[in-house]
Amino acid sequence: MLRTRLDCFSGAEARADAAASMEIGEAKPIRSSEVGSAATPHCLYEVFSTPYTDEEVARGVRAKQSICKGVVVEVAHCIRIPKQEYSVLEHYLYVGRNGCMLMALGVGSLFNHSKQPNLYFAIDHDHLVIRHEQAVDCSFS
Image (cartoon, rainbow, N blue to C red; front, side, top):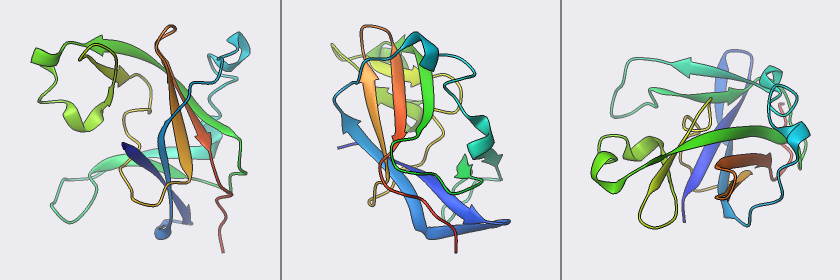
């Protein structure tokens, strides 16, 4: 099962114990009001990028504030990537239909893998969008 992480942090310090993740679920209907800026509350998170090392995540997304369960964190439009083209991008792709992979546009491909999920994602194959939703409360101490 593919799982993804959104790190919750306080100030500039990332909190590994509050890592948020998501796993593949049933796609909920995507309302048109959820697609676009109203559906992607970018004030909830920040994107980061650092030099890559084997010990640290090089790029990803961190929460900037507490996020309540059920909040839609991201609705990412996707493009299909055929199997022969995805080996280089595999860490940023989602499993699609018929052997294809999906690349989430926006920050959807930057959520990091984790074994303790608190974000879920659902793929709407018909509309080529991935909905990222907070599964548990993500709070700061």
